[in-house]
Image (cartoon, rainbow over all chains, first blue to last red; front, side, top):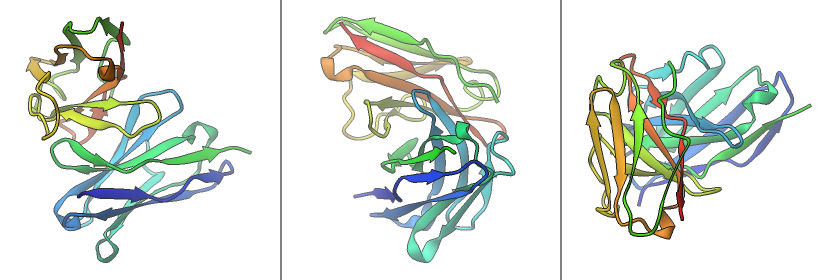
Length: 116
Length: 110
């Protein structure tokens, strides 16, 4: 079955960067786009960007453009999301999700806390 | 890109039917049939309930249905059950090749 397993919780200082990984299994990794979505505490979802796992093409939300970098390692069937210049408002749960039949499979989420 | 507009809350009694609306623009909801609906239980990752406006993934009850008219999509749930109580979010692909989510609707089963 399709599984997306994300890296563990992170605590960062303002101004730091964080890199979250998303290990995919149960399907052919390169056939599907991987999306990244953020959920601030008690809030809804914000789409951050996606990557074409076959060719590495990326598309980012204007809100995060310049601060977010999504990459993938096809040999490791893993996608990554790096967010830089962190501010406290970046605190939240970050999800990866496979784009098939909507976002049909999601990772368990990674809590990123930004605090001094 | 502004978020899609959903009601903050809806409620219904067991057995009743409810509908959650999701209003966007001609650049997102109205542009393509790429609207999805997600259910999120507290502390859990979301789960897709409807994709491409009206398609149900395998395993999703036929009590859930989706539709779209112009710039507004809708999720309907019939025969409400206690387990349906959750937060529901819509999303749409946009003409800019981005994705926009709705603000979420809290469904309460009375």
